Image: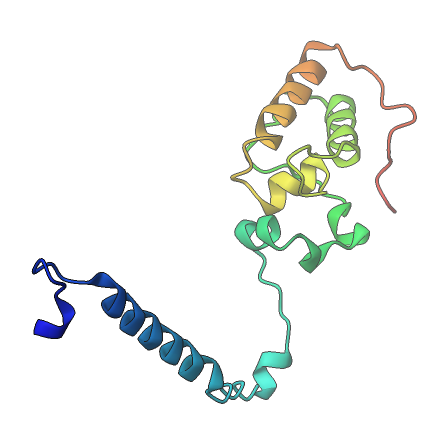
Length: 151
């Protein structure tokens, strides 16, 4: 180690840095010269795509079920909302509006479908409640021009 010291007895850092750089370069050369790892063999089950019917999957995989027919399907009962106090005409107005208006959470479903397929949605619940309150109070009296029940 005496060759690493200069005339004053201090360690010369240049040879140490050169050796460290050489080791780093050799390590990088070895790393990049390795053959690539083989890709895993896919099984026949991997080719099947069965989208689960859950809110998390729909929220983070929006393309999995983006069919307009699925997202706009008619829902007769909006889960979590009691329509017992409504007469048949007001119930029909409520259901038609809930099946016509889109949820603004980004799911692409109607309000009724969003409540039916994602009961945890924090956007559709207050909107449906507001619609129900408006129908119940008589502020919405007609569903003229609004989507009708398919039949």
